[in-house]
Amino acid sequence: MLSGAYLRVLNERPGQAVLWSLGCQRGSASSTEGNRCVEAAEACTADEQCQQLRSEYVAQCLGRAGWRGPGSCVRSRCRRALRRFFARGPPALTHALLFCGCEGPACAERRRQTFAPACAFSGPQLAPPSCLKPLDRCERSRRCRPRLFAFQASCAPAPGSRDGCPEEGGPRCLRAYAGLVGTVVTPNYLDNVSARVAPWCGCEASGNRREECEAFRKLFTRNPCLDGAIQAFDSSQPSVLQDQWNPYQNAGCCFLWVSSMSILTALALQALL
Image (cartoon, rainbow, N blue to C red; front, side, top):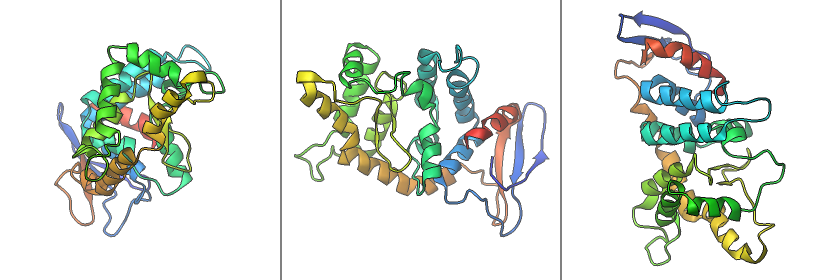
């Protein structure tokens, strides 16, 4: 929920939504103002569908349902829940969580942790495997292969085009990238000091297929088309999130319609903000 804001139930009826008042003090501002990743998380929590799907992947990736014991998780369940989140959630909200811009390491680390990288992204071994291993698995998978092809078609540089990228490829590129989350080539942010993204893999142990491995990894790490699409989305994010607020608001107060059944889960998600 909004940090530094108070919550007040303005109206509640059985089976209907609850109108919550968030920080209704004229001139007051949320302490998270300017942190787009927190704003994106708040907007998702306020949307019933987004919040429900997010709760599902949190339960599978971080909760008891997803963990067999310390240091392990049921990765297939976690990744399935992530695929559902991006396939069924409102794109404006799911993409805002995935592509929110950061200006500092604290925000960037929160962004890196948003989609449970310990379960969905990295493996138990300390060193990442060769990218050829997940790439080969993806190309043999009926689920992953078309998603990877869509990413290549929508995001790979196109030297013959006007700007070197697929025509009108920005939104399509982001959709295709999001479609990879939850597959064997799940990408994520690599650190909290940059916006670099890639699957959890490297090319040091690729043998005579080193060039193929590097070409695949550069689709993420050195791709001006993907970088440009993410930057363009980040520039439009404030207006995208503003559309999610309920119109019943004034200059000193904003309101959110939240299902009464969502309140407890929303509070449980607060730790991820």
